[in-house]
Amino acid sequence: MDLSYILNELGEERDQYYNAVSPPVMQSSNFAFNTVADMRSAMSDEFDATLYSRGQNPTLNILRKKLAALDGAGDALLFSSGIAAISTSVLALVKQGDHVVCVENPYSWTDKLFRHLLPKFGISTTFVTGTALSDFEDAAKPNTRLIYLESPNTFTYELQDLEAVARFAKARGIITIIDNSYCTPLFQQPIKLGIDLVAQSATKYIGGHSDVMAGVVTGSCELIRQIFEHEFMNLGPALSPHSAWLLLRGLRTLPLRLQRSFESTQVITNWLAQHDNIDTVLWPFSTTFPQFELAHEQMQGCGGLFSIALKNSSYAKIEAFCNSLQHMLIAVSWGGHESLVMPAIASIPPEKYDVDNPRHQYIRVYIGLEEPQYLINDMQQALEKVKLLETVYS
Ligand SMILES: *Cc1c(COP(=O)(O)O)cnc(C)c1O
Image (cartoon, rainbow, N blue to C red; front, side, top):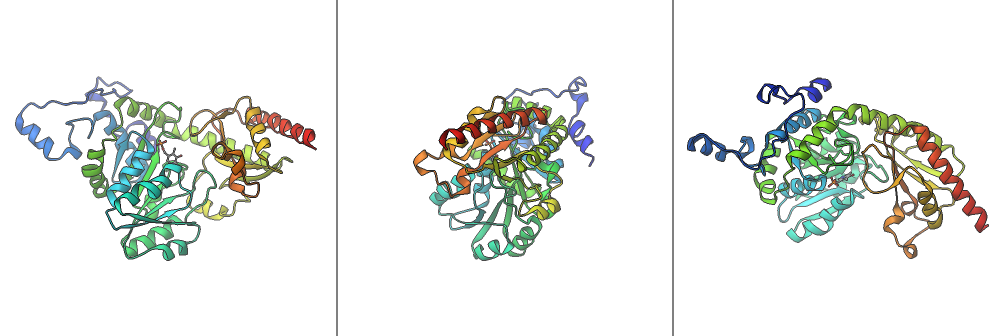
């Protein structure tokens, strides 16, 4: 299916709403029937019926079709947040006594799902580096039900060979799910590589304007229905129609925004890599990235999120750099129009800072839609301030 068709036409039955170009926000929790027989028919299969908005809603269904098509998936399910999409789907796929293999250092609340929530229900998890297929082969047990991937992750960017992991999992009857928020379906299509389910925080690139929280999971009709019929309807993480409308609007410009973020990041990471005060630039499409080749094999482009470490990094220097930025904001999240920084030390108290641990030194940077030179100038003056700090101390 053409990308332009998906983003501009698919799912939009305009003759049903006065040929409005922008679809209506169907702000209704409830939908009425002409006859009891019609109601009975809807109630017998809520997955495909417009009955009650905790299940399906017409505005959401337009978005549902587009997001499924973007991933080349049978169907999609929308959620009120990315983590709701991940937690609800995982809960739907595992039961007491099952085992999960998960990549190390996934998104923080995904990590907590496997470390705190699932053990309460007798589900255990082995964490693996995931950069080699043997990590998964060695960790899999007879009761392994699920392999959880995030490629690349959003702090240190380790990749998994998606095709190889999917092949291994299929042979063993293990379901695979990936968090694809970093790439979006435009830069990586895991289902085409054999992965079963794809989750995204739509709060990030899909929404794209830092004004909506949402999540999505795509996969085969059977798996999406399985997630919907029990855990989704019981836990109730439904997306609001207004949020769905904001995501539809975001989707129209996704290719432009993603390409801009990608291209600016190329320019900015190149500039940073040659800067005297920068020790490390970690970004999957950097020529120095350890998995550069795999990144180019399975990704068609790269998100605008990367991490840097300052030369002779220290707690004070990291704080000085971030606090000195005049345009880039200090914040969590990413994927919006605005550029951001998030240093690891935001969650490490000074007495726990380990100068020899690169993970403590990293400053995560997100490049939004501003002019690259505007951002370079901002980082340049912040790096000057760090240099001044060095002179003061020496
Ligand atoms: C933000 C994020 C999530 C969680 O999504 P929310 O919409 O914040 O619930 C999951 N995975 C990744 C990689 C993220 O960046």
